[in-house]
Image 1 (cartoon, rainbow, N blue to C red):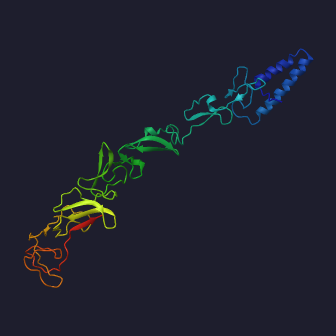
Image 2 (cartoon, helix red, strand yellow):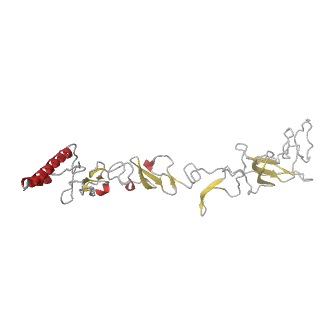
Length: 321
């Protein structure tokens, strides 16, 4: 049997029809309808929610107390209920929204876990509370989430002070911690922002350190990227043939890197130059002759230096990696 749930007004109308029934047939027919309606009303009252219970018949004006009239069923009847919240009247409370979760129109608290207009609590707009140098407010897990504006970074991982670090520096070039290497600087131009080698230097192995002074003027020497005997790419510095690095100051002995204050290959051993005077002790203990021109096996010293030294080969080449 179809559910014949009716409201109080319909029940009164059925009662009046029962009392006014002119014939026995009408009496029986109306009485049966009254019994069915009363039974339906009893079922509808059990576990009822506020407003029109789900399944209650719409009144003659096709209205329900707090829901909507659904499409007619096969028997031509329309019942109260809702299929989704869009069918329900909007909430008048800004902190609640229409709901059809129970099949009857009602309201529920507005979600605050992912709505940037109601983040963490009703009415809290993330866009109204941006930290310093931040933008792009979203909401996740009931907390506002921001992105740093271009040129800034949150390098201390603490958004309470916003994006506190200015990028585009040698210490933080394109991002927090993106530090430029040896002889390199952070540059911003039409090509973008990146760490690039300073003028005169080259990064031979692509590790971000510009270790090779390939464009630096060095006295009687030159530098270029190339392989060593094992085929490993690095920076090679070589004296001009016939010259040597007497003071061995081409390399900073603390860092192993090129020393821009070097005198270069200052010892000229070209034929008949006589520029380097060897006043050291030979490996056999025999002093070099005064005024003797140095060769590749005797360490050069100034003419005024009379201290005895063991002869050592002069440096004519260096390798920087």
